[in-house]
Length: 187
Image (tube, rainbow, N blue to C red; front, side, top):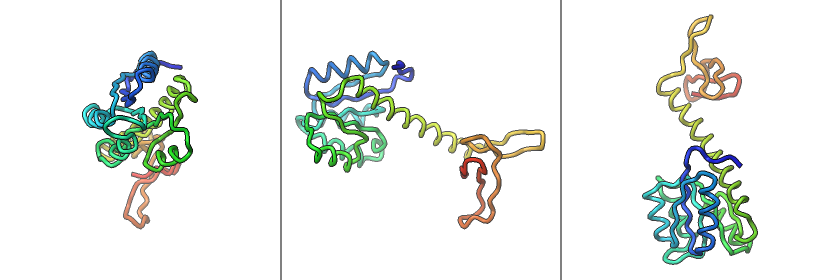
C-alpha cells in the first residue's frame, strides 16, 4: 500500500491499549498523523480541537459512549463531514445498523478485521473525501474567478470538472446558467 504523502490526521478513540498500539503503529507506518484518546468525552473534545481527517471510534468507552460521540460529530456543523469508522467488539447486526443510521461511514468488528483491512477502509474513505473536496474547490474557483480560456475561435468558459466548453442555457427554469454538454456540469 502507498504511504500517505499528505499527512492526513486520524483520531483514534479507543480505550484498549492493545488496539491503540496496533492501529497507531499500522497507521503511522502508512504515513498518517495519529492522535489517540481513551475516552469518549476527550474524543469529542479532540475532534473539535484537532479537526481530524478521519475518526476510528470504539463504542464501549468511558465518560461518553461511542454512539453519543458519533451523534455529536454528525450534529455539529464543523465536524459533520468527518468520516467515522466504528471499530467495536460488538458484532451484533443491530449495533452496525444503529451506527450506520447515526451516520457512521463504516462498521467493523475488532478481531475480525486486520489492521491492513482497516487501512484499506481508511484509504478508500479519504480518497473519496479528497476527490469531493477537489471538485468542490474547482467549482468554487470557477464560480468566483470564471474559467475563461483562449482558443483559436475566441474566448469561452470551460467546465471546472472536465474542461469542455460550457454553453449558456437561457431556458432553465431557475434562470440562465452555464451547462457542460460533455458531463452535464452546471455553474
